[in-house]
Every structure is written in C-alpha cells, then in structure tokens.
Length: 112
Length: 113
Image (cartoon, rainbow over all chains, first blue to last red; front, side, top):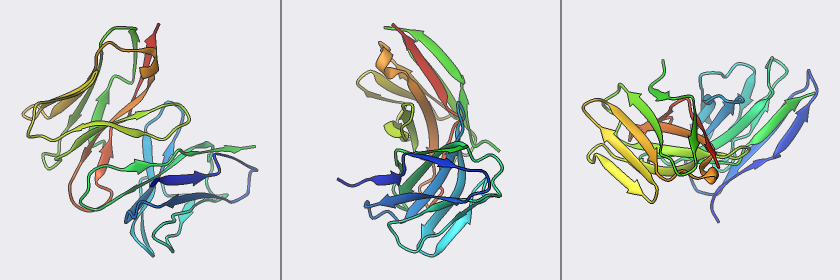
C-alpha cells in the first residue's frame, strides 16, 4: 500500500534537546510538507520541499530544520531554539499539477 | 493573510441533524476545493472535493455547495452521526506548483447522540 509513514507516533523531549521526526513516503510524490497543529488550531506550514536537495521556509520555520536528501524522505528536526515545541506534527506530500495532499498519521511531540 | 476563511470554529449538532460549515476565498485563480476530515490523533484525510464548474457535489451524506460569484463554498452533512465528530478543514488549491493548497482554520464538529 502506498502512503506516508511518520515515526515515532509519540515523542518526548527534554528541554534543550534536538529531536528528529521521520517522514517517509512511497507514493513517488515530488513535494513534501511539514505542518504543525496545536490543540484546537489549524494547520501551520513549517517547511516544504519541491525536489530533492531543495526546500523552502513556511510560515513558522524558526526553530526547525529539514533536509531532503532522498525523494522518499523529509525529516524534520525540532531544535532547542524552538521555544514551544509541544504540538502535533503532520507530514504531507503531493504531485505537482495533481490536486490535494496526502497526509501521514502524525507525531505528537511533548516537552518534559 | 488567511487565503481561505472558515466558520464556525466549533459546531454542536444533534444526531440526525444537518451540519453546515462555510468557507470563503478571495483568489479567483483557485480551481479545486477539497474538504478534509481529521479524527483526533490522526492526519487529515480527503473527504470530498469540487471544481468551480459545478455548483454542487454529493457523496452519500456529504454535499459541497459552491457559489462561484460569491466566492463561497460550504459542506453539508446530512443525518449527522456521532461518528462524524471530527475536525473539518476546507481548502482551496491552485493547479500549478507545490505549496498550492491553502487551508481554512478548521471546524470542530461534535454530534450529540
């Protein structure tokens, strides 16, 4: 089955630590995205990538970093510079010229 | 600037009632309008979508009504069920490029038995 796999489902981070969230897709989609969702809130774009080795900042990129070394993978690192990282993180992918995004099942990050 | 405005933020409906969520947009270049359904702890999933050349699309109990001149579209859920309780996002899309899907802020629907 084609889809997007996010791991882990739950992640706990101590203050001051960097953590990396994994996103892998086997849909052969070119574009990939990271969104942040806070309780009762909408989707806010962190970063997106249209092709390998290229990515652009979204609306709330501060405190986050990404890489796109492979078409299938788009990991997100939440750095210690992110002051309020506790949230639900969603990865998505799409094909240019094709409507709509496919989402993963999310990673819930909690700072302890 | 919010490209797609969605209301209400939350909605409580009795079982069997009609749930209505409204969205509005400004960019007339949008040419695809999907609705996503998100259950707690899950990612959003495409529910139903419409293109601006039709005024209505129905899939089971879910209907999109589209008013091109008013630049508004809405989701109607007929005979609402407790299992429909979820957050619903409207969106609008441009055909070209990436980062071409703009989401509304979401509506949390609760259907009371």
